[in-house]
Length: 462
Image (cartoon, rainbow, N blue to C red):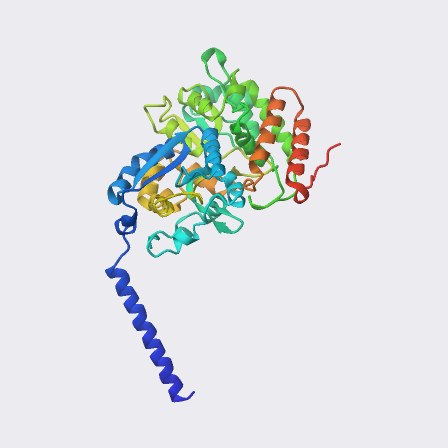
């Protein structure tokens, strides 16, 4: 190699090293700070909306610290699940821009994206003035959960507000009572313990159904509401069924909601009604949570972000210290849970996008995530789950395990309509208006028609 080339290479390398050192010096000397990044937006008010549950209540308690540091005011509106979704859709469709960022269930993401209602986060994350170098979602979040909850068609649109799954809640005091254990074994021939399969779950529900003592084995969320669909999915997945034959929530594929596995899961699900309170067809998640808080139910399937209100909050629950948590009982589909989540999104009509991003980014930091999780949240950060404070929680293990086996659900634009179809048909089955096969066949036909050529029925109906 000629000496001139070697000299040139040396000069280039030296220049590059000098540039790197200079960049490093500038980075250290002028380290990023929230206060400086927020200075242009001081005095601005940002408004958001979400579901009135402990995670959002925890965020509301944290917001004053952000306000103090930035001079940005944060207004938070809290509503019941369905109302929070409908209010956002009204605002997005009207282009009023009432909300500077929104917190919505991830099943709505495909609709938001295809309608051009939300911003990708790329522009925020590549901004040297907005992006905190310490915020590294590609390293700090459960990647599968982040990409399922806040990505669509290969692009990031937000970050998980909550990474949700459902799992089994049970009264550990009842299951560990020596007299109950003796009586249960005498009747069923095996030891009483947390249900590992659906036969055991049914036996436990039957054993503890004692209306004269105001105690029921379980409680179904049978109201004609999204809660019914969400609860039923646990049975569907565990029995080996699904709605669509796809690998990702953003994919369209064959409709399999009326498979033999789905029919068996649905029939089993209805069979639990006899061990539920008489009014179970009017219950949704708030109702069954209240029943468990009052000590009136032995076991049920419920959300991980609601465990705090039952297992930790002594002001709301009579069964603190008496609860246990485990994965959904195993069926032919193996150990599974469902991926659900509420995600931070910035609407395209937001009037304060940058200020909104700064708050979202601040909330995703370790300290805020830990605080929120300890007060009823459901973080997507594994380092928060690993903390000693979180590991002390009675539901920490179940939450981590359910994250590992969680299965995605549709986020395609028609996902809400699919949910509506299934809620209607499942309700008709629970009300004895149709058989399970008739209800699921009708669901399959309507979902296939809704999605078009990408979703043929795998199990044709007559």
